[in-house]
Length: 448
Ligand code: SAH
Ligand code: SF4
Ligand code: F3S
View 1 (spheres, rainbow, N blue to C red):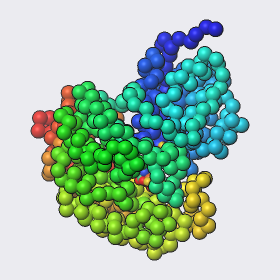
View 2 (spheres, helix red, strand yellow; view 1 turned 120 degrees about the horizontal axis):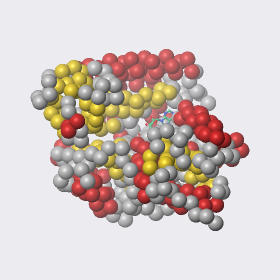
View 3 (spheres, rainbow, N blue to C red; view 1 turned 120 degrees about the vertical axis):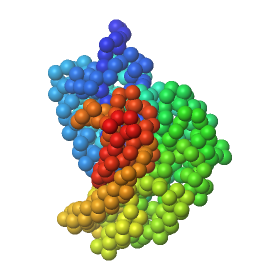
View 4 (tube, helix red, strand yellow; view 1 turned 90 degrees about the vertical axis):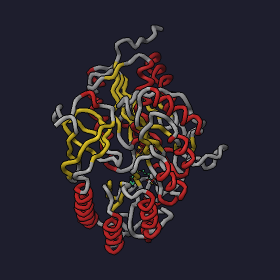
């Protein structure tokens, strides 16, 4: 049989979902690059078109099927194209059933636990021109040393653990990503060192709940220990992490914020609701008061820490009093910003069967009120940056005006300022001249 050659072949990956998925796509891109493929911006022209899916909310599901529908035409016109789908949706049996019956033209289906097998699976599809569906039930041993084709040369995602054991009652992730498994600290430190050597200035440590890093493993380091080790690495100037569950945020980690120069003054700490009754039904294992106390401790240790969060509106049984508790909490905490979500029923989660669903109109009314209040607070906080000089890690020219650069403060805020190309990838002092709700504007000393 004639073997397939990848010379001048191209790929396109469309990614839905969280940073974990984005990083998985970087791994896929890295593996494809090693196989000789080049990236193609145009998904209709690529030889391998991949969709990396997310199942966290219903609209993510809908967008996936919409996108897949677009690829059907491409497949009809160019039957040689390989269409591959992967990611969290593939770990759900009803999705696989739908794909098999309604989308039989999809060439390759794989899941979150066998990402590392992708080169082999793709080669099999190409050589045998057969359709492959390969889904693993749970993650086996952690595979080290996979390549990654990263979006920026100066900042990088680093997985520290996989999976989730928390089973929040609304959430699909424990079903799509399996049980918690932590990478060995020496592997993580080695990766961070090699990233630093290649010019990376900022790393974001990834895990569904980084605070339980190391639990159940055969090494003794916990998450704070890991941060102390990473803080020693020359060249890594900013360490971020995502996501931290309030129930496991330790005093030791709060101390690390104070002690570690490279740990950014930023934390994403999803609260989900301000009502202790709702939190209990969500199985979050903390109360409104616990959360407020954590915020107080964080601010006592790092007064200028930026705190962002996730909030779900309309969880089953959320009364208007419960919702007012959330409004009260956001006014007391004053989040730097927040991601807000309408509750979305997920098949297979405990809350799927909760009967007291909040009516749609009520959900939307609450949602709009919440967003208005959050935006007002964000705008007020951002205004307090005016006149300050912030170190900005410059990401590149702005999409709308190439003379304007964009970058982020240590606290994670997006800044626009006039600069020169050579600043990209560096941390530049920028004087903030204007703080708006969604971004800051500033000037540098050198470029007026
Ligand atoms: N591991 C992270 C969250 C991952 S999912 C954590 O525990 O914080 C990202 C966010 O999606 C969650 O924080 C939650 O706010 C939201 N989310 C998850 N499931 C949802 C659902 N069924 N409906 C609406 N929002 C949901
Ligand atoms: Fe989902 Fe909860 Fe796990 Fe986060 S901690 S991924 S919200 S189950
Ligand atoms: Fe979505 Fe999976 Fe992330 S469900 S939010 S891509 S872990």
